[in-house]
Length: 87
Image (tube, rainbow, N blue to C red; front, top):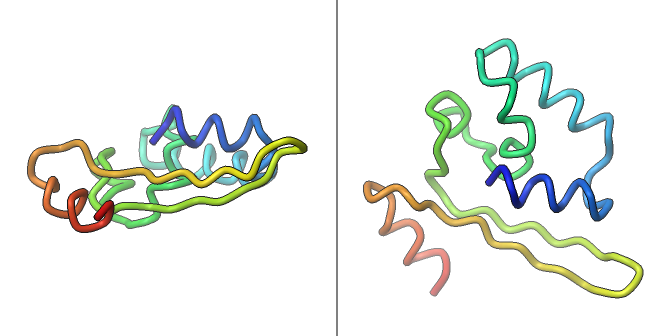
């Protein structure tokens, strides 16, 4: 989630103001380095635990490409969510 969120930000898919908001909110929970993960991890439980629980889909355009990103859980407890969301 962190790498994907950073990619989305670097490609202009989300604005700096929103990232700064995520950084502030993450810091309040002691997870300041998770600011980019929060682009895709929207659930309260995901943000509190620092893991992806459900899939997230993000679409954005660059001057040359139309990009669709799917962020899926990697934690073994949520593999079913990943399989359901990507099939």
